[in-house]
Length: 102
Image 1: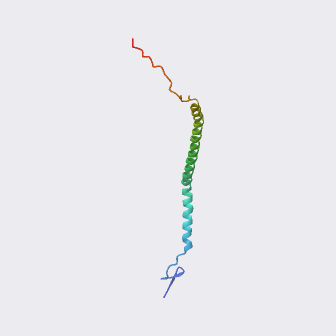
Image 2: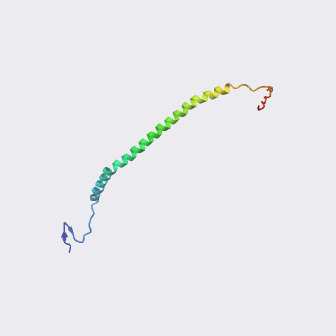
Image 3: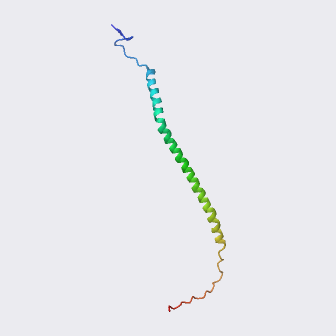
């Protein structure tokens, strides 16, 4: 009733070897890693360089702000100290003289 062809019976359901497909997946993964590794590493390097430049610029701007504040703040405090005290009484001031055009 059943005849054997290529080591299995004709009409018998075909058995799929699960391990045979794993080799194809493994080869595909290796090929993907070899092909895509360069662009992925390039993107990560660009992101790292951008983050480094951003951190350096942020630090430089911070240092510049501190230096500006270090020079401006003491002068403003000194300028406040040198103001004359307000007078307790009204101070008379002479009226200005207007010159007539000649």
